Amino acid sequence: MAAVEVLTSEMVVPAEETPSDGLWLSNLDLAARRGYTPTVYFFRSNGEPGFFAAEAVKDSLARALVAFYPLAGRLGVDAAGRVQVDCTGEGAVFVTARSGYALDDLMSEFVPCRAMRDLLVPATPAPDPPCVLLFVQVTYLRCGGVVLGQAMHHSVCDARGAAHFFETWASIARGDAAAAAGAAPVTPCFDHGLLAARPGTARAVLYDHPEYKPEPEPVDTAGSDYASAILTMTKAQVGALKARCPGASTFRAVVALVWRCACRARALPPEAETRLYSMIDMRARLDPPLPPGYFGNAVVRTSVAATAGEVLSNPVGHAARCALAATTQGGDYARSLVDYLEGVDSMNLPRSGISRAHLRAISWMGMSLHDSDFGWGAPAFMGPALMYYGGFVYVMNAAGKDGGLALVLSLEPETMPEFRKVFADELARLEVV
Image (cartoon, rainbow, N blue to C red; front, side, top):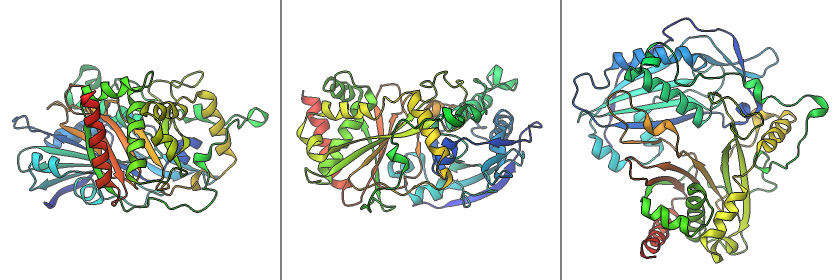
């Protein structure tokens, strides 16, 4: 693996004065995984002399931090000891680096893992107060290409919020008229009180919310030792799969296939319980819905359980119908969860890995993360720089306009080779139908 030489490391502060209040965090913010989410964007050089010039990138970042000023603050605590964001305007860490990699070589080797994260994303401190909330690294490759790596604290926002920030930053860098005048394409909303627990007797926990509770008994978790892979599906394969899953969304159909393949590759006994976890964005499902620019954590964990025998002995459409049960919760479910979290220690919920029999699926489809054109062309690839444990899958749109998908997957090291074989066999069957 080629080494990286750090060239500069500095703090980028907002280009204008910004509010300096404390930002209250909701129970969903506190219940999110405490830590940083590292992502990478690979850009192919367009031959321009000023391609990803550090000063231009820093200038656009400073202007983006005006609209998204909490990211220039620090994680703090209020007078009662509750974690909040201190909007101090101290800035985000900005690093430039140089690597001997060529882009094509890097893309052929890249899978989310600790080594790649350490190569392409700045080192981050313990994710506790008073830590920095945003780290950025621009790595210049020997071919002229660039990798933009970032780590954003998860307590501040979810993936959609991160996409909103990067879309705004990219539009400023491109010189879009509204962004150049200092306006975000969609105005961010920092009123996390919109997700506050209901008061007193109005509070109602209507669901069990097992995803936020410790396992009832010790389980064999997937742990931090994992193998990762990036697998692709063509538009034709996705279409053939959806034909086998009538009424299912693309995400549910693909996750159903991955779930089946994982059960088979893990050689789970028929009676073993396997649980499919998902994350559901509740912005539009609440009544009234959250503002389009809500910048915070507005996703909730959900799950559905079945036996491995049920998943494997039925057609893939059955698994897709099971997945439906984990992805159709409405606003009352989110309100119930927020009320439940009010009665527990939201900052110290169980955050370990999941059982080796389970799968956690997240959709990054349709988000602007993949369209972060900073003025020099759209990324050739975007994805997570690191997976946290085995049994995790992101479903994303593949690069290009052909409608294909990229699946970023982590499994136990001993399971991954068999999963690749099983998954390839399933794709081959889709092609001959």
